[in-house]
Length: 345
Image 1 (tube, rainbow, N blue to C red):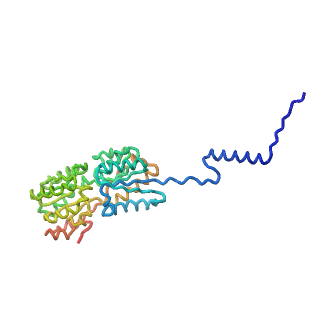
Image 2 (image 1 turned 90 degrees about the vertical axis):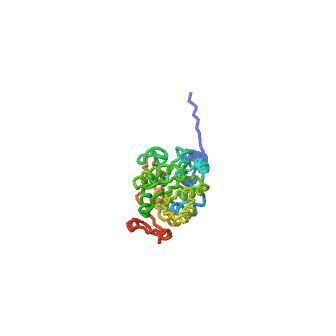
Protein backbone atom coordinates (compact mmCIF):
# COMPACT_ATOMS: atom_id res chain seq x y z
CA UNK A 1 0.00 0.00 0.00
CA UNK A 2 1.52 3.24 -1.07
CA UNK A 3 2.32 5.71 1.67
CA UNK A 4 0.26 8.88 1.67
CA UNK A 5 2.17 11.93 0.55
CA UNK A 6 1.10 15.35 1.88
CA UNK A 7 2.20 18.31 -0.22
CA UNK A 8 2.26 21.86 1.23
CA UNK A 9 2.24 24.81 -1.04
CA UNK A 10 2.97 28.43 0.02
CA UNK A 11 2.04 31.48 -1.95
CA UNK A 12 4.54 34.26 -2.80
CA UNK A 13 2.61 36.65 -0.55
CA UNK A 14 2.89 34.28 2.42
CA UNK A 15 6.63 33.87 1.83
CA UNK A 16 7.25 37.63 1.84
CA UNK A 17 5.17 38.11 4.97
CA UNK A 18 7.02 35.29 6.73
CA UNK A 19 10.41 36.72 5.81
CA UNK A 20 9.33 40.13 7.10
CA UNK A 21 8.27 38.74 10.45
CA UNK A 22 11.55 36.86 10.78
CA UNK A 23 13.50 40.02 9.98
CA UNK A 24 11.63 42.02 12.59
CA UNK A 25 12.32 39.35 15.16
CA UNK A 26 16.03 39.39 14.28
CA UNK A 27 16.23 43.18 14.54
CA UNK A 28 14.26 43.18 17.76
CA UNK A 29 16.84 40.77 19.16
CA UNK A 30 19.49 43.38 18.33
CA UNK A 31 17.51 46.03 20.22
CA UNK A 32 16.54 48.13 17.18
CA UNK A 33 13.72 48.25 14.69
CA UNK A 34 14.27 49.14 11.03
CA UNK A 35 14.64 52.88 10.32
CA UNK A 36 14.85 53.55 14.09
CA UNK A 37 17.57 56.11 14.97
CA UNK A 38 20.21 54.99 17.48
CA UNK A 39 19.56 56.23 21.03
CA UNK A 40 21.21 59.60 21.79
CA UNK A 41 24.50 59.43 23.66
CA UNK A 42 24.18 60.14 27.39
CA UNK A 43 25.41 63.62 28.26
CA UNK A 44 27.58 63.48 31.40
CA UNK A 45 26.18 65.58 34.22
CA UNK A 46 28.71 67.43 36.36
CA UNK A 47 27.86 69.22 39.60
CA UNK A 48 29.95 72.07 41.03
CA UNK A 49 29.32 72.65 44.74
CA UNK A 50 30.70 75.88 46.21
CA UNK A 51 31.14 76.94 49.81
CA UNK A 52 29.54 80.37 50.22
CA UNK A 53 26.48 82.43 49.32
CA UNK A 54 25.15 82.51 45.77
CA UNK A 55 26.26 86.14 45.49
CA UNK A 56 29.85 84.87 45.27
CA UNK A 57 29.09 83.59 41.77
CA UNK A 58 29.10 87.17 40.49
CA UNK A 59 32.16 88.39 42.39
CA UNK A 60 35.88 87.83 42.20
CA UNK A 61 37.62 85.51 42.50
CA UNK A 62 34.76 83.00 42.30
CA UNK A 63 33.66 84.22 38.87
CA UNK A 64 37.21 83.92 37.50
CA UNK A 65 37.76 80.51 39.10
CA UNK A 66 34.52 79.13 37.67
CA UNK A 67 35.45 80.59 34.28
CA UNK A 68 38.84 78.88 34.54
CA UNK A 69 37.16 75.53 35.15
CA UNK A 70 34.75 76.04 32.24
CA UNK A 71 37.63 77.03 29.96
CA UNK A 72 39.49 73.92 31.06
CA UNK A 73 36.52 71.82 29.94
CA UNK A 74 36.41 73.60 26.58
CA UNK A 75 40.13 73.03 26.07
CA UNK A 76 39.43 69.31 26.45
CA UNK A 77 36.64 69.36 23.87
CA UNK A 78 33.61 69.69 26.15
CA UNK A 79 30.80 72.08 25.21
CA UNK A 80 28.13 72.78 27.82
CA UNK A 81 24.69 71.85 26.58
CA UNK A 82 26.11 69.55 23.90
CA UNK A 83 28.40 66.88 25.31
CA UNK A 84 28.42 67.90 28.97
CA UNK A 85 26.11 69.49 31.54
CA UNK A 86 27.36 71.56 34.50
CA UNK A 87 25.07 72.24 37.47
CA UNK A 88 26.53 74.93 39.75
CA UNK A 89 25.27 75.14 43.35
CA UNK A 90 26.16 77.54 46.19
CA UNK A 91 25.44 77.07 49.89
CA UNK A 92 26.75 79.03 52.87
CA UNK A 93 26.18 76.79 55.89
CA UNK A 94 27.16 73.17 56.51
CA UNK A 95 23.51 72.12 56.71
CA UNK A 96 22.63 73.74 53.40
CA UNK A 97 25.72 72.28 51.76
CA UNK A 98 24.74 68.79 52.87
CA UNK A 99 21.21 69.34 51.56
CA UNK A 100 22.57 70.40 48.17
CA UNK A 101 24.95 67.43 48.12
CA UNK A 102 22.14 64.99 48.92
CA UNK A 103 20.04 66.48 46.13
CA UNK A 104 22.87 66.17 43.62
CA UNK A 105 23.46 62.54 44.58
CA UNK A 106 19.76 61.84 44.08
CA UNK A 107 19.65 63.28 40.55
CA UNK A 108 22.18 61.57 40.08
CA UNK A 109 25.30 63.25 38.70
CA UNK A 110 28.39 61.61 37.22
CA UNK A 111 31.01 63.75 39.02
CA UNK A 112 30.84 66.30 41.84
CA UNK A 113 33.43 69.08 41.76
CA UNK A 114 33.80 70.91 45.08
CA UNK A 115 35.21 74.28 46.12
CA UNK A 116 36.16 74.66 49.75
CA UNK A 117 36.63 72.22 52.61
CA UNK A 118 32.99 72.39 53.88
CA UNK A 119 31.62 71.62 50.39
CA UNK A 120 34.01 68.70 50.00
CA UNK A 121 33.02 67.33 53.40
CA UNK A 122 29.32 67.62 52.54
CA UNK A 123 29.81 65.79 49.25
CA UNK A 124 31.93 63.09 50.88
CA UNK A 125 29.30 62.51 53.58
CA UNK A 126 26.58 62.30 50.93
CA UNK A 127 28.26 59.65 48.76
CA UNK A 128 31.16 57.24 48.80
CA UNK A 129 30.56 56.05 45.23
CA UNK A 130 30.10 59.12 42.99
CA UNK A 131 33.55 60.54 42.10
CA UNK A 132 34.41 63.83 43.82
CA UNK A 133 37.00 66.27 42.45
CA UNK A 134 38.02 68.69 45.23
CA UNK A 135 39.55 71.98 44.16
CA UNK A 136 42.25 73.91 46.02
CA UNK A 137 41.55 72.28 49.40
CA UNK A 138 43.73 73.41 52.29
CA UNK A 139 44.59 70.03 53.82
CA UNK A 140 42.89 67.01 52.21
CA UNK A 141 44.74 64.48 54.37
CA UNK A 142 44.11 66.20 57.70
CA UNK A 143 40.48 66.73 56.71
CA UNK A 144 40.10 63.00 56.07
CA UNK A 145 39.26 63.28 52.37
CA UNK A 146 42.17 61.15 51.09
CA UNK A 147 44.57 58.62 52.59
CA UNK A 148 47.57 60.26 50.92
CA UNK A 149 48.31 62.63 48.05
CA UNK A 150 49.90 59.90 45.93
CA UNK A 151 47.20 57.30 46.65
CA UNK A 152 43.86 58.94 47.54
CA UNK A 153 42.28 55.55 48.10
CA UNK A 154 38.57 56.46 47.89
CA UNK A 155 36.16 58.38 45.70
CA UNK A 156 37.87 61.75 46.23
CA UNK A 157 40.80 63.30 44.37
CA UNK A 158 41.72 66.71 42.96
CA UNK A 159 44.08 69.46 44.10
CA UNK A 160 45.33 71.06 47.30
CA UNK A 161 46.49 74.63 47.77
CA UNK A 162 48.55 73.54 50.82
CA UNK A 163 47.17 76.65 52.54
CA UNK A 164 47.94 75.43 56.05
CA UNK A 165 51.64 75.12 55.18
CA UNK A 166 51.57 78.58 53.57
CA UNK A 167 50.49 80.26 56.81
CA UNK A 168 54.03 80.25 58.15
CA UNK A 169 55.28 81.81 54.92
CA UNK A 170 52.57 84.48 55.16
CA UNK A 171 53.71 85.45 58.65
CA UNK A 172 57.31 85.60 57.46
CA UNK A 173 56.39 87.89 54.55
CA UNK A 174 54.29 90.09 56.85
CA UNK A 175 57.25 90.67 59.14
CA UNK A 176 59.52 91.29 56.14
CA UNK A 177 57.12 93.94 54.80
CA UNK A 178 56.65 95.55 58.23
CA UNK A 179 59.77 94.79 60.30
CA UNK A 180 58.61 96.79 63.33
CA UNK A 181 55.65 94.51 64.16
CA UNK A 182 55.71 92.44 67.35
CA UNK A 183 52.09 91.44 68.16
CA UNK A 184 50.01 89.84 65.41
CA UNK A 185 46.25 89.22 65.71
CA UNK A 186 45.18 86.13 63.74
CA UNK A 187 41.63 85.73 62.40
CA UNK A 188 40.59 82.07 62.26
CA UNK A 189 37.38 80.10 61.80
CA UNK A 190 37.56 77.25 64.36
CA UNK A 191 34.93 75.22 62.49
CA UNK A 192 37.31 74.94 59.52
CA UNK A 193 39.63 71.96 60.03
CA UNK A 194 42.22 73.53 57.74
CA UNK A 195 42.37 76.59 60.00
CA UNK A 196 43.37 74.38 62.92
CA UNK A 197 46.39 73.17 60.97
CA UNK A 198 47.09 76.67 59.64
CA UNK A 199 47.19 77.94 63.22
CA UNK A 200 49.72 75.27 64.17
CA UNK A 201 52.00 76.25 61.27
CA UNK A 202 51.57 79.93 62.15
CA UNK A 203 52.62 79.25 65.75
CA UNK A 204 55.72 77.39 64.58
CA UNK A 205 56.72 80.31 62.39
CA UNK A 206 56.04 82.87 65.14
CA UNK A 207 58.51 81.16 67.48
CA UNK A 208 61.23 81.32 64.85
CA UNK A 209 60.42 84.95 64.04
CA UNK A 210 60.05 86.09 67.66
CA UNK A 211 56.46 87.31 67.20
CA UNK A 212 53.58 87.21 69.68
CA UNK A 213 50.29 85.85 68.32
CA UNK A 214 46.70 86.47 69.43
CA UNK A 215 44.11 84.01 68.11
CA UNK A 216 40.74 85.57 67.27
CA UNK A 217 38.02 83.00 66.54
CA UNK A 218 35.24 84.05 64.17
CA UNK A 219 32.56 81.53 63.30
CA UNK A 220 30.13 83.98 61.71
CA UNK A 221 29.59 87.60 60.77
CA UNK A 222 28.44 88.53 64.28
CA UNK A 223 31.85 87.57 65.74
CA UNK A 224 33.94 90.13 63.88
CA UNK A 225 33.06 93.11 66.05
CA UNK A 226 34.18 91.31 69.22
CA UNK A 227 37.34 90.05 67.49
CA UNK A 228 38.27 93.54 66.31
CA UNK A 229 37.72 95.01 69.78
CA UNK A 230 39.90 92.29 71.32
CA UNK A 231 42.72 93.03 68.88
CA UNK A 232 42.64 96.74 69.71
CA UNK A 233 42.46 96.17 73.48
CA UNK A 234 45.50 93.90 73.36
CA UNK A 235 47.37 96.49 71.26
CA UNK A 236 47.98 94.21 68.29
CA UNK A 237 50.17 95.96 65.71
CA UNK A 238 49.49 93.66 62.73
CA UNK A 239 46.82 91.33 61.39
CA UNK A 240 46.90 87.94 59.67
CA UNK A 241 43.87 86.12 58.20
CA UNK A 242 43.75 82.36 57.78
CA UNK A 243 42.18 81.01 54.57
CA UNK A 244 38.45 80.40 55.02
CA UNK A 245 35.32 80.96 52.92
CA UNK A 246 33.45 82.77 55.71
CA UNK A 247 36.40 85.08 56.39
CA UNK A 248 36.70 85.61 52.65
CA UNK A 249 33.05 86.70 52.48
CA UNK A 250 33.75 89.40 55.08
CA UNK A 251 36.95 90.78 53.57
CA UNK A 252 35.60 94.33 53.17
CA UNK A 253 35.00 94.57 56.93
CA UNK A 254 38.47 93.22 57.67
CA UNK A 255 40.20 95.59 55.23
CA UNK A 256 38.27 98.52 56.70
CA UNK A 257 39.21 97.53 60.26
CA UNK A 258 42.91 97.21 59.37
CA UNK A 259 42.84 100.64 57.70
CA UNK A 260 41.10 102.32 60.67
CA UNK A 261 43.44 100.63 63.14
CA UNK A 262 46.58 101.39 61.13
CA UNK A 263 47.45 97.67 61.05
CA UNK A 264 49.66 96.12 58.38
CA UNK A 265 47.77 92.99 57.33
CA UNK A 266 48.52 89.82 55.42
CA UNK A 267 45.65 88.06 53.63
CA UNK A 268 45.22 84.51 52.37
CA UNK A 269 43.71 85.45 48.99
CA UNK A 270 45.27 87.79 46.45
CA UNK A 271 42.00 89.58 45.65
CA UNK A 272 42.03 90.85 49.23
CA UNK A 273 45.01 93.03 48.31
CA UNK A 274 43.09 94.31 45.31
CA UNK A 275 40.24 95.15 47.72
CA UNK A 276 42.54 97.39 49.76
CA UNK A 277 44.50 94.90 51.88
CA UNK A 278 48.23 95.51 52.28
CA UNK A 279 49.67 92.19 51.09
CA UNK A 280 48.40 88.72 50.13
CA UNK A 281 50.07 85.40 49.42
CA UNK A 282 48.44 82.29 47.99
CA UNK A 283 48.79 79.51 45.47
CA UNK A 284 47.66 80.35 41.94
CA UNK A 285 44.06 79.24 42.48
CA UNK A 286 42.71 79.83 38.97
CA UNK A 287 45.23 77.31 37.67
CA UNK A 288 43.96 74.71 40.13
CA UNK A 289 40.35 75.28 39.02
CA UNK A 290 41.36 74.87 35.39
CA UNK A 291 43.13 71.65 36.36
CA UNK A 292 39.89 70.29 37.87
CA UNK A 293 38.66 69.87 34.29
CA UNK A 294 41.50 67.40 33.68
CA UNK A 295 40.29 65.24 36.57
CA UNK A 296 36.70 65.35 35.30
CA UNK A 297 37.88 64.27 31.84
CA UNK A 298 39.93 61.37 33.19
CA UNK A 299 37.06 60.15 35.36
CA UNK A 300 34.52 60.36 32.54
CA UNK A 301 36.90 58.25 30.45
CA UNK A 302 37.00 55.52 33.09
CA UNK A 303 39.71 56.46 35.57
CA UNK A 304 39.00 55.97 39.27
CA UNK A 305 39.60 58.79 41.77
CA UNK A 306 41.54 56.37 43.97
CA UNK A 307 44.14 56.04 41.19
CA UNK A 308 44.52 59.77 40.42
CA UNK A 309 47.11 61.46 42.69
CA UNK A 310 46.19 64.75 44.36
CA UNK A 311 48.17 67.62 42.81
CA UNK A 312 49.91 70.44 44.67
CA UNK A 313 50.38 73.97 43.33
CA UNK A 314 53.54 74.96 41.50
CA UNK A 315 52.82 78.68 41.05
CA UNK A 316 52.22 81.21 43.84
CA UNK A 317 50.97 84.81 43.87
CA UNK A 318 52.40 87.50 46.16
CA UNK A 319 50.55 90.81 45.80
CA UNK A 320 51.53 94.13 47.42
CA UNK A 321 49.22 97.15 47.52
CA UNK A 322 51.46 100.23 47.60
CA UNK A 323 48.45 102.55 47.95
CA UNK A 324 47.61 100.88 51.25
CA UNK A 325 51.26 100.92 52.33
CA UNK A 326 51.36 104.68 51.72
CA UNK A 327 48.15 105.20 53.70
CA UNK A 328 49.71 103.28 56.59
CA UNK A 329 52.92 105.32 56.36
CA UNK A 330 54.78 102.10 55.62
CA UNK A 331 57.74 101.74 53.26
CA UNK A 332 58.00 98.22 51.84
CA UNK A 333 61.67 97.13 51.76
CA UNK A 334 63.09 96.71 48.22
CA UNK A 335 63.95 93.03 48.71
CA UNK A 336 60.28 92.34 49.56
CA UNK A 337 59.05 94.26 46.50
CA UNK A 338 61.32 92.15 44.31
CA UNK A 339 59.49 89.00 45.48
CA UNK A 340 56.07 90.32 44.45
CA UNK A 341 54.31 88.82 41.45
CA UNK A 342 51.99 91.86 41.34
CA UNK A 343 52.29 95.39 42.71
CA UNK A 344 49.21 97.62 42.94
CA UNK A 345 50.26 101.24 42.51
